[in-house]
Image (cartoon, rainbow, N blue to C red; front, side):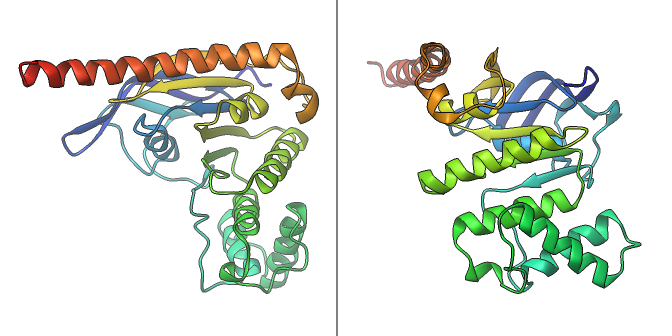
Amino acid sequence: MNAAPGFTVEDVSFAYGNTPVLQHINLTIQAGEFLCLLGPSGSGKTALQRLLAGLERPASGRITWRGAAVTGPSIERGMVFQDYSLYPWMTLVDNIGLALELSDPSLTKAMRRERAAEYLAAVGLQGTGRQYPFELSGGMRQRAAIARILALSSSALLLDEPFGALDPLNRARLQDLLTAIWSQATPRRTVVFVTHDVEEAIYLGDRVVMLGSSPGRVIGEVAVPFPRPRRRRELFTAPEFHRLSDTISDHYHSEVLEHIHEAWTMTGLKEGI
């Protein structure tokens, strides 16, 4: 992993209208790191991703990417959303060709189509270039979305629960595909992966950062000590894996229970209980 910082998040707070979403977030993500953001619904995971992508602006604080302030979207920071975000009126080749045109306007249409086919093949979708997104399964659409982000040549990949709606088999396949693409790239891309699944966070990440909710804030982080490449069957049966999973789960769930207790206490006080 490179020693240089990729993202720095300095005392960032964010709100939707009058509703606080993130509060005093401080975080450094190294260039080439695979970071997993773990947190319950309402912890601001997606909001933080959108801030890193430049799709939102913080209410206070500062975010930088490679030392420069993030002030808006850039193809340097590609984001994969939960709903795939492919253009439904375009074939897969044209979806990916649009990304290639943004990353390298000098490419001819024929060159874009050829490279688009190569990116589709890289994610296991060879021969699907003429198909439209609605003709594909959810897993195939998500692979196409990843191919499009790769075609942008983004140095940072921001993935917002990209596998959450998939069945376990396709989810495992795409986890392995993503880690293979990330580990084989030179230099490695910086990946920020949002999930609420503890096992997924440990399996994928170099580091797991936990967010608490209402409003979102960093409540803990752990380095993942397991060497790569990771083999799912060996890792998931190792005692060290279960100890780390239990440590994260205990920390994660204790914070959730504390919030529930606080909410009930406040309700009880207001109602005179």
